[in-house]
Length: 307
Image (spheres, rainbow, N blue to C red):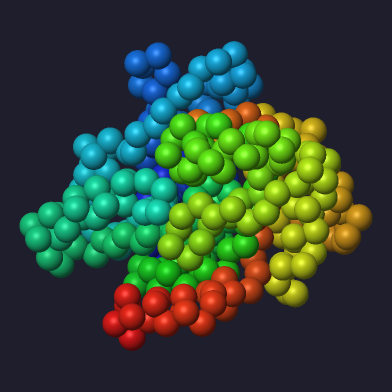
């Protein structure tokens, strides 16, 4: 069935370029800054993962910025001019101001072109889990979902993405304001390898810790075994120039079930700037993460939504 809509995808999906570079899909890039110079997070077309992470290992402390507003506006205008209904699957508002900026631009253009079929979805996840959702969105697009159906699908599917990732230390996340100094300090002193995920608001959440990397890698594989959907045997393994560790997770998954399909990839420079070299993640389809909320949190969620 021919595609009924186009997609805009940002570089924080952290997928290999060849998987997302296809007709009807427009890519827009986040930016990162090293030594006051701004670079595009362009799916490693301009720099190799090793070069980027070696910079960090050698003391560089990159910062990041959202997609340039002019680039977002150009993507939306291209969509309007094409006449093809288009959906922007946007990196989590819980981690970046990019969604709010993109939404403001979208609102302005919708005021100018009220009939324009362009849409924006806050995915409330980032990096490897965003990549998992994007891969399936591409498949759903090719199966004929309309833009409206794609929006409804993505807004529901984002809660069924399970992820867990291990960072080598918490310094980079602390510098970026993602976690408190006390948590970073405790982790370094106790030689713990933090395990993190995303809450349903799209923010980072500390899920646990491991004494050492080897045990942490086993916990990633164990998380898949416990939490993956029964009818799914696919996982994305992301890593920050830590291929041997990613391979180890793949080996552990194969011991569980040798029919599991795995795509392994280096995460991009934007997320890499915040997690540092050595991060390893796993993402897959599982149960509805909203069901894990406490009763009090479920009530609060309904209140916020006016349900």
